[in-house]
Amino acid sequence: MRKLLAVAAMACGLALAGCQTTLPSLDISNAVALNTIYGIENAYGIAVNAANAYKALPLCRTGTRPSATNICAKRSVIVNLQSAMSRARLAVNNAVAFQKTYPTLDVTNVVAAAQAALSDVQVVLASGAN
Image (cartoon, rainbow, N blue to C red):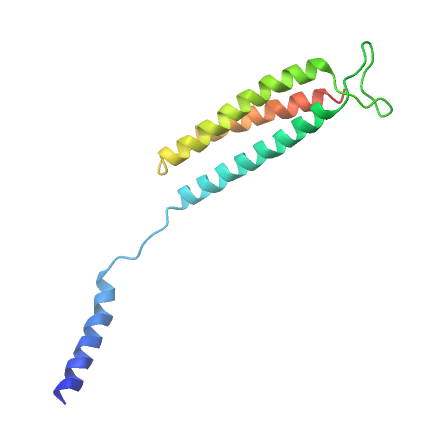
């Protein structure tokens, strides 16, 4: 009987001990920031693929423009694309490093800088179609 009473007391004690501990909480802003950083990295990967595809096109002959029948890459766009991709790579690397170094801080500014740099790449790529 004493063993049964001791086991029951221990079981009740363990059950009540759970009430005294605090439950772990998730910091939702960090999860959102992490997803945003992953999205930026993925967007950069897509931009790299698009830039490589454009650079793989044959160069336009002097005096010609790209068209549906003349598929080619303009030299000026390739030059602008190289500098835009360099700025985008730096901005994305800074955003990733900031999020890894300071996981609890707001990443809005570094993400905005990376998004702006990726937008610049998109504008340069679009100018190659004209």
